[in-house]
Image (cartoon, rainbow, N blue to C red):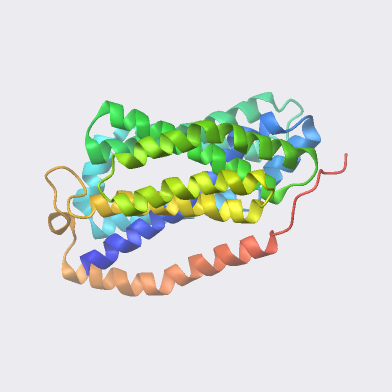
Length: 294
């Protein structure tokens, strides 16, 4: 049962990285691919209906860790208290910026908050998981740069997929530009992982996304960046599986059998609703976003 819940937690974290990954990327890129308020709204409108729903994956992942593996939860969030606190600050600042920019005349501080509030979690989550794996400042820095660069690439591809006109063209250019950093860093970061097959496949997927965006195949390029993030996450959690924290085995971190059994029944009821809600939301808002009328 504990193995099942480790897989569920890995799935929830992976869903968060994929979905919030392009949210963070769009938040960081919007001021740079847009020219004027209308195009800025066009870029941010691509994530407007989904960004808060995507955060449900983080809440679910952390809640599942707390209930299924309390020792892992306590150790991780105690050891990384400061970076996790900064992640929360970033998410709050980003949320305030997104909600308030349509209600104020001068949007500068809102836009700055969106950029900073997107960049902080994008960097820090990579740094946290890399440090958890290797207990090294150099590894944490590499992991942070990797996750930041991949989020920007993922967001640029998403913008190219969901917009039209000048923003779409600039987003494609941004994707090709940031790929010069994202792909080499992904190779460097994935080379450190022991699970070589998914790690290598992740780097290949990200490189393939660059070729696809060059050919204006945004849908397939987005599939490739999402696949790269999934494969990287799989490699990370496979390496964490025997010992999620130094000196802490999975069995020692797990709750009792009764708790895990009750959680399984609760998960069977709630998880399908999360998936159906997310799927319906993306289906409803699947069309390209045009420049709003002024």
